[in-house]
Image 1 (cartoon, rainbow, N blue to C red):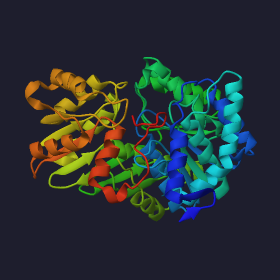
Image 2 (image 1 turned 45 degrees about the vertical axis):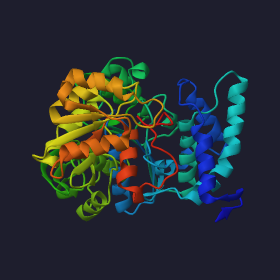
Image 3 (image 1 turned 120 degrees about the vertical axis):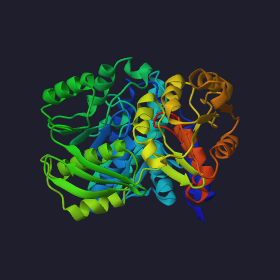
Length: 468
């Protein structure tokens, strides 16, 4: 089927044209000015973000899972929802969802036809004053907010791209600000301290908002407390106002009892593995209570809570994509994420022999990732993804041998080869863990679950055309 918006092109071809245009743009680099560009574009479009009720989510790890669970809970309570997340694994339409489904091809094409002239207008102005074109994440932010306003959603869950204060999404006025656990990452952006991370991420806290925070290290907690006080925001803490009271892992995920400021929810099934996902579920339900209660946590009907979690998913987060051997993919791409993965990996794989497949981008802490993986696996296969930022296998192999020794390390030149070697090493009764890069997760899923991965481009992180 062709579309009149792109004469002579099918919808799929038109989508590829849009993707090519968006991802040809540079990643965000001019951090101090990106909010001005996004605000200018939105003002030309009538400031659609001002019509939206927003849950705004930031943190170092767990942002996407928490965002997806929160949206699923809101939808289970009858709300017409929007969800803006990153990265995508296969198609950028995954980043903009309405009522739990990625934006349709036709909707994307129609949206682009309307927004593209405004993007060009902002680009022209920015170049004239010596700035850059809008980055691809700035463009996606504009597209997402316009799509949600067009759909007249009752609530939108918006995940930041990087940081918070200067992030392109910080044009929104989030009435609930969610802070997942904070740790060191993107040190060139935040500096080399958790305090710097927290100062940036607490920038999403708006005046008189409700802040829902997961358990934080002391340095972050101090900054969060001060920011909430300064902005007259109410603050709900894991450990003080909410907690995971009970947790039982099983093959399908875990059964939880969650205590919040408003209620205790017993025997809640969450179809995701890991104690970090229990923490994300707790944060999501507290955010939902605050949003539905307009700032005052409101007890939720248990049947709606169970429905919401049953319909939640988090592709690429401790996700099983094959059996015999079991193959798991996890998007952890920094030592903090690997630490969260380590805490619950064995409850998923049991006593199986475990082989790691690792790919890391050159701007990430490859040594730290490998050091975190080393106690978890019996052997490791290092490789590279298609990302131009990927560390070469021989470089990653050198780092791996320092952590593992020569005998436990294998190098492979491609993801296909790495998977084949890992499957051979693990044997049919073993397990394979693929982690270290979101691009790796996307490419492994494309190999092993092709029916689910028929998108038009490779995985991408929030602020780069290729994944973290």
